Amino acid sequence: MIRFIPRETKFFELLAELSSAMNEGARLLRGILEDPHDLEARVEQMQAIEHRGDKAIHAIMTKLNQTFITPFDREDIHHLASSLDDVLDYMNTAATRPRRRRRSWRESSCCRAKSWRAAFRCWRKMAR
Image (cartoon, rainbow, N blue to C red):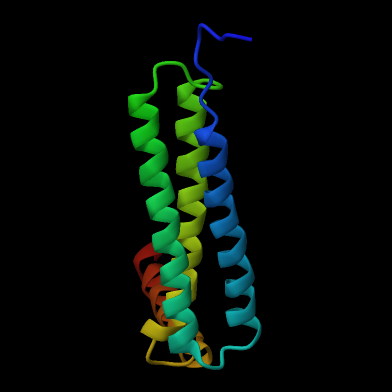
């Protein structure tokens, strides 16, 4: 059967690639949070996954700008791809955060609690 309107299916493949990267990143992040051994290598792996997701989002946006008729609304494709990319970016940030911290979580929590107490005392003095 001859089609007068071309049907573009590349979007589905690219969205599947992006969601696959997100799934792989989520599993790796879970592993990092459960057992942070060999953190440097695993963070590098997470960044590679995030770069793969960035390539997929770039391909989706390029294809979106080049395609006249899309399988569903172009705004929906853009919103879905952007949201998936944001989640992948947040996972990458969460994975790299322990590497950037020099203090332990406990030390950091103690410092925050002390500063909150000091701020609360200051606020009470100002309220009098």
